[in-house]
Structures are given as C-alpha cells and as structure tokens.
Amino acid sequence: MTSNRTVTVFGAYGHTGRFVVAELRRRGWTPILSGRDSDKLNVIGAAHRGLDIRPASIDDPSSLDRALAGAAAVINCAGPFARTSAPVIEAALRSQIPYLDVAAEIEVVAATFEQYADVAREAGIVIVPSMAFYGGLGDLLATAAMGDWPAADEICIAYGLSSWKPTLGTRATTQVSKQRRDGRRIVFSNRRMEFRTDDAPILDWTFPAPIGMQAVVSEFTMADSVTIPSHLSTPEIRSYMTVAAVKDLSDPDLSPPAAADESGRSSQTFLVEVVARSGSAERRAAASGRDIYAITAPLVVEATERVVSGRANKTGVVAAGEAFDARDFLRSLSPEHLSLEIQ
Ligand SMILES: NC(=O)c1ccc[n+]([C@@H]2O[C@H](COP(=O)([O-])OP(=O)(O)OC[C@H]3O[C@@H](n4cnc5c(N)ncnc54)[C@H](OP(=O)(O)O)[C@@H]3O)[C@@H](O)[C@H]2O)c1
Image 1 (cartoon, rainbow, N blue to C red):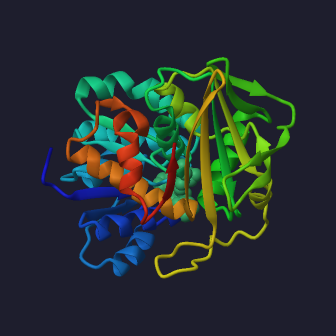
Image 2: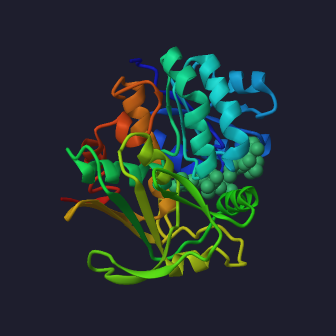
Image 3: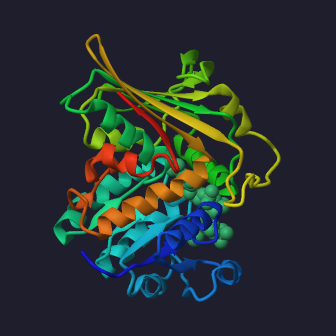
C-alpha cells in the first residue's frame, strides 16, 4: 500500500490513453504522460498542464525506466500489444510496480499469463492484462454470474454493440491478429484454445430488453476467453457479437469514433450479457453503457486504484475477476458508468 498517486500512462495520447488520463485526473491521480512520440505527448500535455511528460520507446529500456520512475503503477494503452506489452512489463518488474494494460489480443494476453506468472508472483508484483471492455468486463461479469458455483458446463458471452467504429489502434491490432492466425479463427473449447477454418456461424441471441433478438456472429472469441479460464472452471466459452458491429469493422472510413458528449464518448452503446450454465441451471449477469473505448478508462483506473491500495487478492498475473471482488468492482462503476443486472 502506498500514498503515491502518480501513474505512468504509456500510450497516453492514443484514443483510449486519453480517456484513461482524463479518468485518472478526475479521480485525483497525477498521470505521467508517456509514449514514443514527443510531439503528440506535448499536444496532450497542453490539454493537461503541469503533468510530467516522459517520452519513451519500447526499444530503449532505460527510457521506459525513466518513464516509470517514481510512479505507483503503469497503465499500458499502447497497442498493438504484441510489440509493447513485454517491454513495458519488463520495465514494471525492474521498477517493482504493478502493471495493467488494455490488451484485446488473445495470444498476447495468453503469453502474458504464461511468461510472467511465476516471475511476477515471486517478485510480489500484480500484473492485470486486458483490464478493459474486452477481457476485463466479460471476466468480471462471468465471475459475478458464477457466484458460488465451483464450475460451469459453459459460459456464454454475448456482445450487443449498436455499432463499432474502430480506432486505428483497433484496426492495427485486428491486422496483427489476422496475420498471426493465418486465416484461422480461435475458439475456447474442450478447455483449450482450438483453431477453426470454417466460417463462424450466424445465430440469433435474445438480449435483455430493449435490445431483444439480434443476429450475432458466434465464436467471436475475445480476450475474456483467456482471462476467464485462468481462474474459472469451464470447458466451453461461447462468444457472440452483433452482426451489425462486425460489419462496421471493415468500414473504409478511417476517422476515429466521433465524440457525442463533452467527455468525448461516442454515441455507441453496448450491452454485454454473460450466461453461465451448469446442467439445466443458468446464472446471468449483464452490463450496459456507452462507448467501449471510454468505459475502458474507469475499468482500468478502478483496477489500478484497488491494486495500488493493496486490495488485489493476489500477486502475479491475474484476471480482473480473480484479482478483485467482481460484484463489488462492478457495483463501484454503477450507475455512473455501467447499468448492471446480476442474478
Ligand atoms: N480490450 C479492450 O477492450 C480495448 C479497449 C480499448 C483499446 N484497446 C486496445 O488498445 C490499443 C490502443 O487502442 P486505441 O483505440 O487507443 O488506438 P489509437 O488511438 O490508435 O492509439 C494507439 C496508441 O498506441 C501507440 N502505439 C502503437 N504502437 C506503439 C509502439 N510500438 N510503441 C509505442 N506506442 C505505440 C500509438 O502511438 P503512435 O501514435 O505514436 O503510433 C498510440 O498512442 C489497441 O491495441 C486496442 O485494441 C483494447
């Protein structure tokens, strides 16, 4: 536990990084603005006068060490994380501070668990990967839905997005993942990641009102298929995404999501419903809100607050639902950021 309320944000001037910097300030933290481009850092620095600006490159460990010096934690918002996560985690381990990121890349999040679980635990450091809309939120909802169940036969996660205007970071990340998979899809089945080569089936999913029945792409596997099995016992994770949102991902218009309110949130709405099944019994948890990039900021900042104040359940690489009391965490974001329904 520390009274230090300084947090380095790596990738501070990206679309998500800017939401994170604003949320940290709103909660009385002092962000250190870091990233690879000094000019872009100066632009965001001009909007947040008085904050420390520390350019750093993933290819220069000493620059990362300078960026993290004196901080209570580092939040990595620079993606694709295939390149940034390992160097920034290494820097956090050298600086002996917690590391959190917003990675959506399945393979990268899996690699973070595999490569750093032991070293982080031995060092007594908390690493929370994917503490974001994809990864963290589904994991918290799955944990809340499971409640006292020791295991489930399957966990279904249905994403009801009104639209999905991707940022350049999301586009780059999608490209990196596609290249890595060489045309194959990933599905968590039989307690492991499996590759599929056929087209993902299109089904109907009935979301809670007012969204109702929607066409969804099934087997739309996201980072929660890594975080959930790291601490919840289930052989199958089934993920669904509204067809309309998937179509938006190939929109040739490269402009970022347009701000629709003074906080910079777009008009996009989301509803994430998680259903855990055991035999014929079902347990559900759902969260709805606005803008999947904007909601990532309160998720990762709340997690940072809890880790830095000594409220993480364990050290090492931990998923949100294992690191924190999932229901308490979700409720702390409600109703300001999320509307919740937990059975
Ligand atoms: N899991 C989730 O739900 C979730 C939510 C939000 C975002 N994300 C992820 O977060 C990442 C950023 O998304 P975004 O929407 O903020 O995109 P963005 O606006 O395009 O920002 C990307 C940021 O990453 C930086 N960056 C990229 N490669 C870098 C490298 N090699 N070294 C240093 N900095 C690098 C960029 O710096 P330059 O401008 O200098 O290139 C920029 O600051 C993406 O990977 C996205 O998938 C995930």
